[in-house]
Length: 97
Image 1 (cartoon, rainbow, N blue to C red):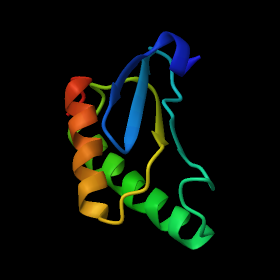
Image 2 (image 1 turned 90 degrees about the vertical axis):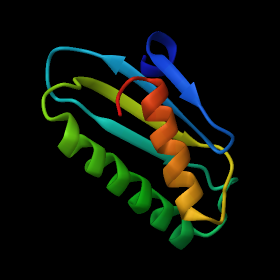
Image 3 (image 1 turned 60 degrees about the vertical axis):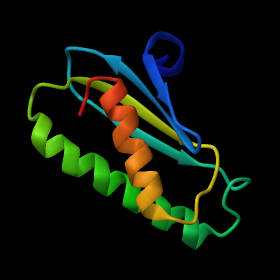
């Protein structure tokens, strides 16, 4: 539903889909395919880094952003800082940052 009806922003390594809604709970989903990153340890580390970035942004949003978000990583980038910057650019494109 979020991917079909929501807004999206993409970067070379990931995409963010956002669907506004007024009723809680507001959720964040994150997927990193085993085809993209073979090691489960690396996938989980990547998830933690990206979720920490979302949590950091959420503190700034407060109650301003209401909706569901799905983050899809489709290309692994060994530099976590680049992925964080790409995520922040996607949020800015969606007017969420």
